Length: 482
Image (spheres, rainbow, N blue to C red):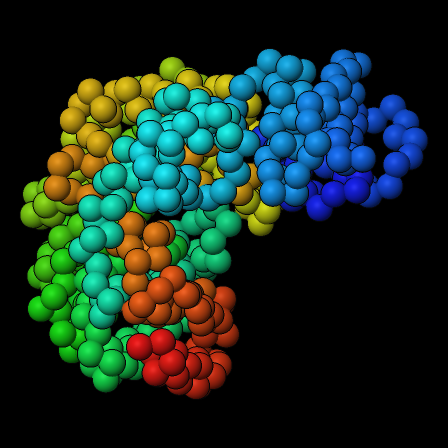
């Protein structure tokens, strides 16, 4: 497909809109008018103060233009015209309209603050063409997030610990993670943990020096539960030595792969007062699990969940993904029903995102059309809402099926604080480990500065001294922004 961008700078927005409607198409951008041959073409143009959009796709032609003189202040004019053209051609009406940002609830919060709730809702529907259902979802999440954000103070921070190892790589995954089954990865782990403990100690000293108070701890990855029980014990012990945990509100460890969960590991985590874990099925369909490379059974998911509850975890999250390879609307509904029957405190419903470095993207797999994913999410929302769950957290990813969303649902009082603190950038997040990104948040104001760790574990180990030097920026940052 050719996307012609003529006499305007909205190439990013127009490309993203085209990708919503045609997720499996390769989109070629051109910046000069010309003969496009027989290829499907979307032409976007500004001339003499008027916006023109014309589409010729599969032999069907649609043309539209703005009714009044175009103003650079209203960059949504072109988006709405293109949205109307593509909707008319495909018969698909994406429920998030022309909104392509990753944090719809944050935009809703801003609109409510600036214009009031009634006008905010009106802007979502009329300016951004967001559906009634998604507008209501954004408003509900905005309210829940605002309550959690209020818990954060200027001297707050959270801690993220990266464990970039997994038992195997899922077909949709784009994270930098190593299969723990390979000899090279096994060899890396002991030294990786040595450096990780050292970095945690460094962050502890910085937090103490800056008089910062820890709010939440989150182990992510990868799959942190690929570590042995004694290794998890060591990391948790290091955190207790390095930080004053008297202000800690939440302690989460991802045990995302059920085939990594054992009672000794669960007991080690509970011994250190970890209160929240994730056991992520993604689907309860065995055929879909097999298709995406999850090397475990449905029975193992249920067993791991029951072990976690018997070990005393008060809050368990389960992830599901809409739009997975080989999944159907009916299968997805059954997965939602199974999760609700188990009754974990959190259920996070994701939409498949086709990441560039994932196996799905590399092998050129087709992405399900947005209309099917919409049916999946609509059912999940209805079922979860009727089962006592409320939405508290939402974000979106690039190249997400149908431009849809990921939503965290929670039983009352069981929301994941870290998810909101991190996504809404309420306060500083110290991030330890390979691939981790520290976000420094100015105590007053919205300014954010990032410090990146090396992406791969071997780099993290071999160049650790450079990371230590980078931490000098943290002191400088707080001196400048306090």
